[in-house]
Image (cartoon, rainbow, N blue to C red; front, side):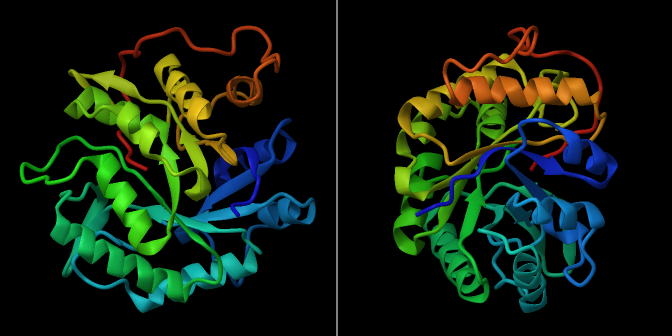
Amino acid sequence: MTPRLGVGIGWRPEIDLTVERLPGVDFVEVVAENVRPERLPDSLVELRARGLPVVPHGVTLSLGGAERPDPARLDRLARTAAALDAPLVSEHLAFVRAGDLEAGHLLPLPRTREALAVVAENVRIAQDALPVPLALENVAALLSWPQDELTEAQFLGELVERTGVLLLIDVANLYTNQVNVGLDPVTVLDAVPPDHLAYVHVAGGVMRDGVWHDTHAHPVPAPVLDLLAALCERVPPPGVLLERDDNYPSDADLAAELAAIRAVIQPGHDPGPATRPEPGPAADGGAARDD
């Protein structure tokens, strides 16, 4: 059974006080590598004292890499989960390093059976090392590998069958992959096993030079909320989390985005005026981010 999380927001040091006072926050997620389990930020301690679940979200395990997970990284993630009394932890279905080379980016996997076998073994190693369940997130892509043997839906489905891992479905990443590489997000939504959905990410991005960049620095566009609604029609998500990593708006704007998310997952909830963005991508600058 996956825990019921509700509506949440990514906790960041730049908006720690904002997160504490925002209405409608049921849980938060923190980038695991940005906190020390021995000395948690006071804001996270405060939120935990209020009873809000805090989910550590890893970005450096590289579970899709050819090498086995680093025991030291796994140990730190496990200690962070224990320090936060987390209901689960999440990571990415991606690789970030090969040997001594760090990509500094969450790179998509070739969806081959060989890659599936490698990542399944890495997931099992991580599951054995962690004190709570593990959820894996689909990533945004600027490219697809030419030797793919499986669709994204097939790859996720077989990985769940082999390992029992939970899924963190990022509908913003599904939209990114639809725009950039032509992947059909509906096939992924149709394949999500209801009892293995941990929670969902939504985030904003920007169109630049014909490419959709998953920036986490812009308002959530209408097509992403539409994909969230489509997922809700198939599987009621235990939790939905808003990611924001830069260009932070006012408290009121963040509260409006949370209300718009709640209106999608709880029909009949009034999100208030002007909370749903207009359809279509914006066109301006911003740093690209895959998460």
